[in-house]
Length: 512
Image 1 (cartoon, rainbow, N blue to C red):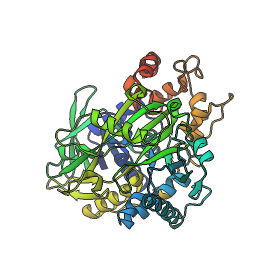
Image 2 (image 1 turned 90 degrees about the vertical axis):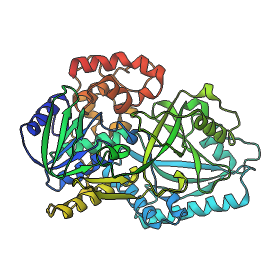
Image 3 (image 1 turned 45 degrees about the vertical axis):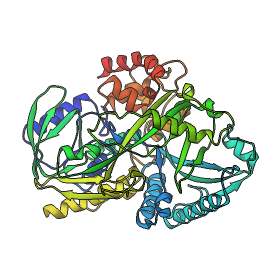
Image 4 (image 1 turned 180 degrees about the vertical axis):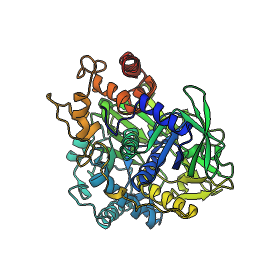
C-alpha cells in the first residue's frame, strides 16, 4: 500500500485507462509545471474531478529553471506595481508558514557596500529593503519567519560571503527573502497533494485538438490516442501555450544561471547580491544551494523563435554573469570554475515593446475561440493565487459551481500538518533528506525496499539510495532523467550525473 499521494507507473496506467474508457471529468488541465499542478490542486480540493496531463514530466519546463526564490515582490514595488508586490508578499508568507514550511526557508541576502557603489545606489537599496520590511508586515509575515533587514559590519559581511572583496568594504545591507530547497520538488509536492485529493496526475501524456469540452490525448509511452471529455479544459502549458491556442502570443524571456561548487565562494551562508552596473533595481545573485552548490543568476534576454524543450545558456550570458559577480569578489571566477549551467524561458505576455526585464509579470486568463481556457504569464511565487483565479474564472465562464478555494491554508505533502507525514524512522535522518522531504523524510527510509537504502547514490553526493527509489514509487519518476534532473538536481553537474546514473537505472529497473 503506497497511499493516496503516491504517483507511480501502475497508478498512471489505471487512471489513464479510466479516461480512455470514456469517464468524463470536470477539469482537464494541460501542463505539469507549477501553474498546472496548482490548478489541479485548487480544483480537486473544491470537490471537482480533475485530470492533469503533461507531455513530458512534472516540472519539465520553466518551473525547474527558476532561481529557487519565493520573492516578496520588492522589485515590483520599485517599479510602481503595488498590487503584484503585495500579492507576492502574501503568497510568500502562505508558502513559508502554511503550505510548504519544509520547502521554503528564509534566505539572507547580502549587498556588500563597496567603493564602486555610489551614495545614490546605497540609498536606493536601503530604501528598498525598508520597503520590503513594510511589505512583510503588510502581508502578516512575522519577523521570526523572515527577519528584519539591517546593516552589518565588514567582519560580518565576510563571514556571510567569504570571497567578497574586502578592499574598501564598508559592511553591507542584509535582507531576507524566501528560498526554495528546489522548485521542481515544490511542483512534485503540489501535484502529489492534488493526487491526495483525487486528481489524476498523468505524465508522458500529450494533448492536442483541445476544445471547450474535450481534448485528444496521446500516451507517449505506447503511442495510443483517444478523446477525453471534460466540463472544462484549461491550458497551463506555459511557454508552449500557443501550440494549443494559436491566438496566444507570448514573449519568452531567457533567464540563465551558472552552477558552482560552494567552495568557489568560500561556502557562503548568504546570497551575495550585486547590483548590475548601470541598472536600477536589478541584481545578480550568488545563492547557496543544496548538494554543496552555489547558483549564480540571473539574466533576462529576449528569446524569440521556436521554443526548445531544454533552453541553453549563451556564451554572452555566461560572460555577463561572471563579469558582474567579479565586480564584488576578491578572487576572480572564470569559466573553468563553472560546473554546470541552465536556462529557462519566462512565459511573458507580449506587450510589443520595451525590454523583457521591464515586461509585467502579471498573468492573464483568456478563452480561445475553441473554448479552451488558457492562463498565461505570471510567476512562480504567485502560482497558488493564479490557480485560484483561473478556477474561479473557469467556473464562471462555464456556469458551474464548486466549493470555495481552500489552498491558502492547505499543507502540502511533507508539511508537518499534512496527514501523510506519520511514519517514524528507526535510524538517524540525514539533514539533507529532511531539507528535501520535510516531515515525510521518515517515510522515504521506512518505505524503502532497495538494498542499502541509506547509502549515498555515489561518493560525495548527499542523496541516498532510498530517495531514488521513492522518486519511482511515490513521486512519479518514469525514467533515469526524471530522477536525476527533476526529483533531484544531480544532473545539473555532468560529472555527478555520470556517477549517479547507475543507481538511478537500478531503481527504474527494480521498482518502475
